[in-house]
Image (cartoon, rainbow over all chains, first blue to last red; front, side, top):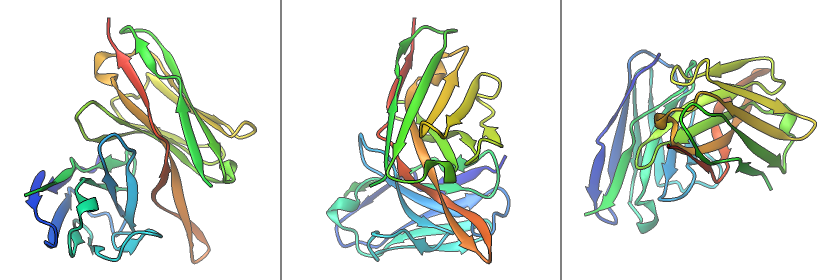
Length: 107
Length: 126
């Protein structure tokens, strides 16, 4: 099983801020990592796959980087609609695993 | 447009069974691997199971292995999750999700879960 450590679990930020969320793997997964956004009462939405490729329709203020064991999701200029919970997920091996989640809240 | 609609959730007693369904439309269902992911109230996402596009391979989370069975009927564009010996800790919203794929140098590669259903709530309680 690949264990994932996502940090921070809670991030307080203001509109316009640059925020960075980290995801660390217990073993290397190349670039087989996805990031999702989830708003309360809604299903998650795919933001980024292959660690750094933006899903169609996702704003360019979102970006991903990393490979191997360390990955980051960056939101360059936080907008009001970005306040949500974010999850990383590895799809390198089964069982697929998700990070614990990062809630981005209004400061 | 792609749609995934789960059904079959409800309140069930510990030790009993329940079968969830996920009706797919708007894409060629038989070409995609499909997953179940769950989320306990107030908690994070937990991957549950996957089935290959043709049903040839299935994988499960350790927490449900031996109790849950994923299956599909490509003629009905429907994904299923048979849940037996249910426990209180299985209480969650259950989502079905499509595995996005991409072709890299002639090889089909996964690229995350690109479409999700709205979820169906399963409550295990006496």
